[in-house]
Image (cartoon, rainbow, N blue to C red; front, top):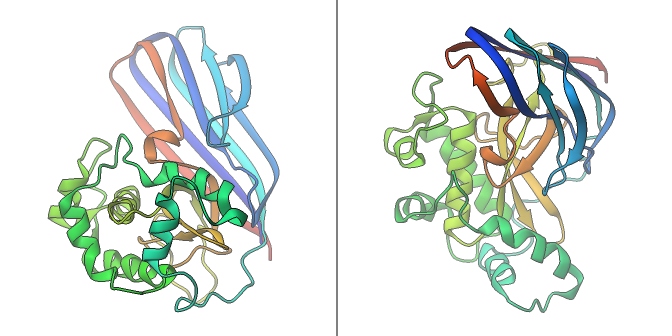
Length: 299
């Protein structure tokens, strides 16, 4: 599947902004089932000191500053990607039990030599992060999915399905500052919250899970329902599974991402992969508009 993604972010300030320093994570990354064909970033007003680097997690980051006074700030990211999809048939009931995976991740010196480097890299995603702290409440919510001897893929799939059934998508309930405990208590939130919730549940049981930021196809195939989150950036989570690598799950839509999910990048939580952040001097009051269009160019 060949996609074109156009992501426009515009800030309009009541007062003049004299200077700003910015980081944008709006360029997709190459990964196992995704190839980036092209990716451009247009900034208005003129962006000084523009440069691109890779962060700790391997995501592409554009750094730039706006050094002239302005009232409107616009970033337009246009990318084309090719999604290959996962053609292998996933058997949820085969493979390592979740307890075995937990043990593998907790070993200080891995006995699983073939996977030692992957396990070491994955361990960082078993720890708490700034926006996701494990708790007894998260462990209790996760517990019904983590039955003895159950395969790790079946366990995570069951957790995803439960979140989808138990929680209501409500864009007016949460903000970036809403605690995860509040999402769990009120059973409401958005894709970011559901991804954080799932990651917190998995980490509470000793598994490695990371936050994935990206997009989903805006226009679904004929006869299929439009996916939640299609008009904005989207979020889901990925879990480490030995011998398979990282497998994505989308609890907002109760699906395993394949050929409709475009990956921007990943990190421990939203804070590591925020699309746009920075520091401004002046212009404290503002209005924000974000629009996303995902076009399928060819199958």
